[in-house]
Image (cartoon, rainbow, N blue to C red; front, side):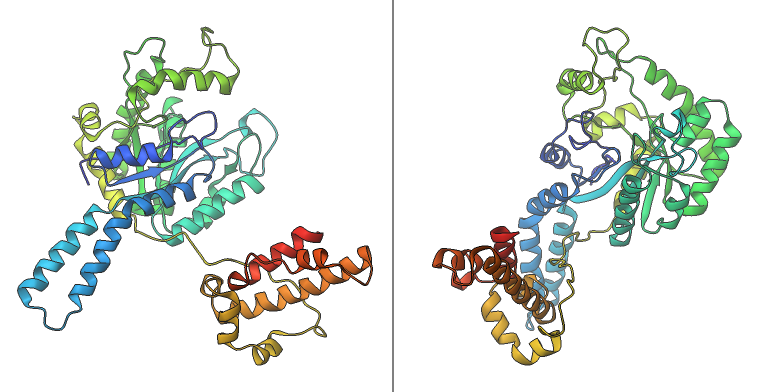
Length: 427
């Protein structure tokens, strides 16, 4: 990694706010020596799978090389000199892997996620959450799901209660001017800001960071007030960080990839807010919100190098983990008089089901899972035939039978295609 990693980044999945493509973010980060980047869209994780898949594809060649090196290391006649060289190559290749940091910029309800009454409840304090490992990813998923199911009131909101409940495996930063600590500093409530910092440190320990931003701009028709607010706040935030022994990080609140995209982003914001571009009172950005290079970020934070270095610390804390999983099939109740899993295990061996399900056998989770799929698919076939008899009579023509028994080809026959074919035919 280089001297900086972006940890506050919005893609076009921050609807009508961000305009960065996933590929654009990853490619530019990698091109400029940043072997990691975070995705922190507003209130959602819609882009996570695309993000993970794109990085996985980008890392595929390196993974192939790593696998080859591991095989070479297993050779029995390997000399110590060759082993040392292979271990060095292994370490070098591991450093080349691009790390996707999965996160979200959440809205933390000021009076609790269940409070849905007036203006104060319509949004919430901004807060950056990053998944440090698989546990953190699962907890992040729970938090975001809860924000939409229970906390939705103009915005999907979480609160301190569930944040503490699902805190394991998460790295947290205080976000932008809209963060809880930042807002209290803006309002002159330094005691309240310190109290908030101590709450986050109690819950997240050394995985809580205070975030600094500097959007000094000379762009025409840009927002010039933000930098002034950031400068005033940053001075107090640094003092609070020193007083509470909390580390600081630098970020750039990325909303587009290249500097020249700022004008297009302004038009996107006009669409979002329903305002004319010429409206003097419309919402404006500083036009500094592009994915700046480490060199550019070093220029912005030259006087606070530790704020840049700490972004590397966070990136190094984040583990490589897989968010993919085997197919998760819902369990449907099957009448005992039709059949049971035990009966199907006696009736169908692993070899028989492997032959029927082909490449889907392992994808579905192996023998134990496939037995269940087979039972449910057979029962669904029974229901489909009963429904067809009721609709078309006892004697079915070949076309109707083909619809019920549909499969792409006999050698690709599997439980999933049978389930979908029955449903598409009659349900």
